[in-house]
Amino acid sequence: MKYWVFALLLLGSSPMWADKAPIALAIHGGAGTILREEMSPELEKAFIEALNQSLDAGYQVLLKGGSSLDAVSASVIVMENSPLFNAGKGAVFTHEGVNELDAAIMDGSTLAAGAVAGVRTVKNPILLARKVMTDSPHVMLTGSGADAFAKTTNLELVGPEYFHTERRWQQLQKLLKAGDKGTKLSEDADKTGSRKEAYRFSSEENRFGTVGAVALDSKGRLAAATSTGGMTNKRWGRVGDAPVIGAGTYANGYCAVSATGHGEYFIRAAVAHDICARVEYLKQPLQAASEAVVMDKLVQMKGEGGVIAVDRQGQVALPFNSKGMYRAYIDANGKRVVAIYRD
Ligand code: ASP
Image 1 (cartoon, rainbow, N blue to C red):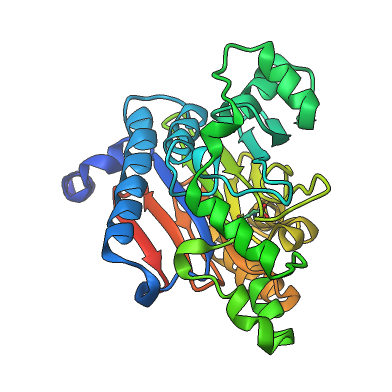
Image 2: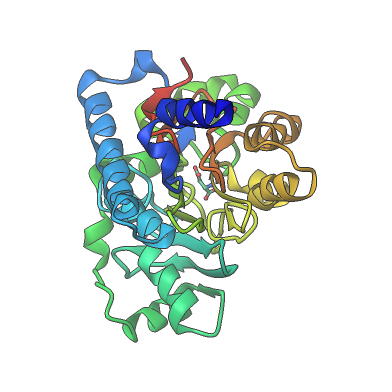
């Protein structure tokens, strides 16, 4: 009798969501020197709105019982279609004045993955990455080959004018004038005081930037997706971490991670896989695993940026070692957060 009463009390105190399989979603729109004092109220509002739209798009999929793969795709597409983020429409320019896009997607439940790098003609590179995963025998396609593969699909193709935004174009001109060497802005400014002003970018003009999403669906499947224009003034076919499985994007049965930051560091630190390996092998909680990599390992290497991560319990972690990171999540408890700055 006593036990029945206890059980009934426990049931009664459980919130509604506790009876259901957990679902969770986290997104990012890039990390970097993003400071409140340098952001106009209009731009801040636009970013918050876009983050909310992206979060809603993915979460609706999960609420309807859809897959984590569909959820992360839906969230990323919203940000790829926005000129605000460095992905799809708002992608940065290469040294040659074109836009070369990288993207990857991974299904943690099957370890299937698809990635594209340096594509120029696809409106939504995340969808092409997904086609590589589902409709090709390969994991990663690059450059003109990836664009040729895109022609065999039903995906929307666009001309170079689609990706031309004045803000990104001026960003490239500024760097070209300053004789940019492709290093971090802060390093350039430190080394050459006289060039400091030329290299000075406001928070609105981060030379990096990426979008990404991670999700846990009601069937317990984890997925990760990342899409980016890479680095302003990149050349020689430079590819960052975003499309590199295990670096900027990774998902398995334990966790899903999408990264944003200076790709040259994230590749060498194998960031996304390292976090999931810590969760799987060391049994570290997601937050501890993510922080060990982002706030310790990467900081020691001087690699700037952050990640979004979700585990199979629907816990989320969003550590970043930069000044800010466009980010949002709804965790397994239904808690919703949308944020930009560190505080
Ligand atoms: N990780 C991206 C790259 O290096 C850029 C970014 O996330 O800001 O291409």
